[in-house]
Length: 166
Image 1: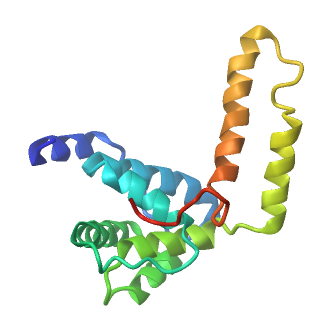
Image 2 (image 1 turned 90 degrees about the horizontal axis):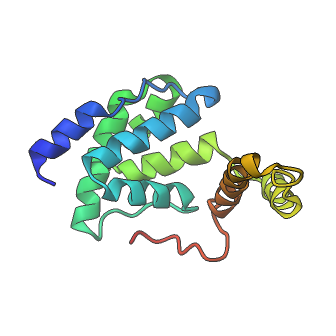
């Protein structure tokens, strides 16, 4: 994909609205930001998901490509942040580490607790979404159940997650 195609695609994708740190607006902002950045370069999708799962600070200094994407992400994020969220970005102004900013925003907006892990685990095991469904309802119910499994699998620190950028 050349630069002209990337610019054209990013114009077609919905731009995120400014985010000031309101938890009710986080999910929408997060999804729009990931979509927007992945329209610019697909690697952002992988990098942003990886950063969101990390428990420790993101080191973007050892890989030039990662560093370039990190600085670009910081600049884009900064332009869409306001209020408390902008204050977090201001703390990283010197490093311009966009993936660390993304990790902190995710950690603050989606704290993972032991109770959350347990609740999702029970929901998966019970599979109530699948019980008593007609043939017409089953496919939709299966997608809902799989979405719950995906939520559980995205919890940082679970076995099978390397915590490393690819």
